[in-house]
Image (cartoon, rainbow, N blue to C red; front, side, top):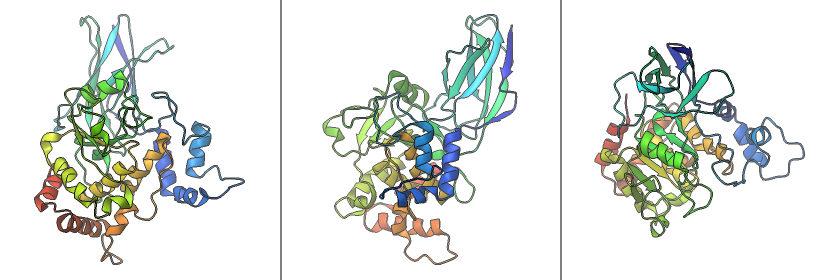
Length: 379
């Protein structure tokens, strides 16, 4: 006999962890900027409520600039895994299925399922790397298939971030959880950002076999785009596996990406993103912060993202031990404020200037931007 314990039927479940939620609350209150002002001078009695001091004191001494061997480093960018509990008199497994029509490219699995060791006198499984704002159903089935429970259903909440845990890497997120300024959505399961997947080009990250299986078999990444311009001299294939194509499309971070010698690098990246046959794409540099962060600021504005979440998506890298990341004023999007007047829609002004930059300086065809928007804007 199989008896389901939790989650209850009809549950609404968040994929956001408490530290991610508190981090964004602190970010929204301006504590990051306070730390930015404090960081470069001696502080005798630092305020423990300032965001990054809070992270250090709460989670790890020397939280930043600390590079222990993966996968055991403090990694606060992983999603919340949902716990499922049941009682039975035979060995069983958890089955999780989509409970709605989906158009996620690559036919990804509904979840990664793990069975942690647990001392409680009940059976436990966890499901992670779920999609946000999605309906699911679940049941428990005996290992021999002779028994099964009834189905229960749950819905994941519509919240940022939709993080991915691929053991051995970090900072992996789906752009599809970034809300648009009009309350609409970006399509999930298409474009992911992240950190390096190996320690050959740069030290610090290296997928474990579990992490590789998540990206290859659960998320089903089709294209691995590496922003590190020397990587193709070292790597010839993706660490994810033979079914994932590997592409070095170099990028630069911050103001360097807008210098004349690097402006031509924008066009091939945008053309790759515009081609839906490449989806799902994972785009990364070493830490998933500077080159990746610069590109995704611009891409998210192209998709009319709520600008608060453009900032959050950049600064959440601070949860990975890869140094603090600050978003001062409007970040790299601030260079695209020409013509802005009080009362204007700031994202619309930025998007118009970004598109003009792409068309006039980068040689990007307007149809490329139109395809990106058509592919990635859900509603």
